Length: 447
Image 1 (cartoon, helix red, strand yellow):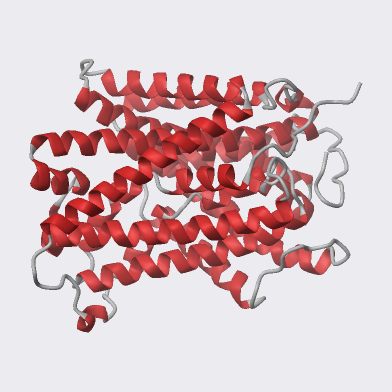
Image 2 (tube, rainbow, N blue to C red):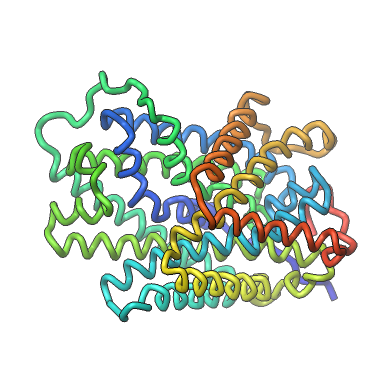
């Protein structure tokens, strides 16, 4: 009997929905205030958001070449294993299961919980209760089947984009007769480096497309199209919504706001507008959390396929067309992190610090892997090649290195805990607990 494995069931629209839903998370409702506080004019802020979209697109082109040449449910894990060997591949898969993806799910669940509790209070522990319920519900939704998870994602992404367009409409309604932007204000801010840290963090998540490459129809064409179309759409949305913030609140108002979308809709429609903004953020967090759960389990599945100690994760349910055990294990770890965050009373901040350095370390290594595989694996057919090579991947690698430094320089104890958990993976390798016989990787990444 043939062993169950990922099948190409996702359409181009499904892939776009997952990518847009992952990128357009809660950051766009918080980081614009941090950006505005470090620039002199709205024009400088909008320029930063445009540059962020361009840098993200450069990285997406690098990932598009890797995913088209090596389509695999393991995504980055597969690329890193090919470029550097099974040991580094294991460390990445361990980090993604224990730190990166589960931490990201917990972050999104905490934001969802905070805003859901403001709409329907459940007492002091309400945010953590909502966060835990969200992880359970979304994990079970994806366990039911790949088509169910994709349909839920498409609906949530549509609602999320409609909500952002509503914010844009509120900004247009509040805009005065004078133009918001001044071309003379495009001079770079002295704090532009810090500004770009905030901007690029808000664009994060597009790399999740790599985990769809084994399940997207015609990946050689559709992964590239999905990444490019998604990032063009996200860049347009980000610029539009930031223009709306400035139109409705002004530079000083945006910089001073702690909940800029809520403040804008409150000014446009009163208290009910603020409630609508809270609901919009709940939808945005749910959308991103669902996408993170969907893609995160694919790495755990690949880990289970290659290492005997984690074999239970590498089982693919043929009826649901999902890695059920990987989804359940990922959900359990995310719930444990939510409990930890609830105990510290600083769940969101702790989880951001916990994930950031490890995330940027492996994104940097994936960018370098493109150079390694171009040189070492020249016989593999590459349906898509990065334009302007090597300039394009060099810019991407430099951006990742900069953000790795920033995530270590500007974070606290949470970052040390995340690095310590990564060190546990190193210990598993040293003691032999993670040893096994990784199965040979097929030339085009298939199982």
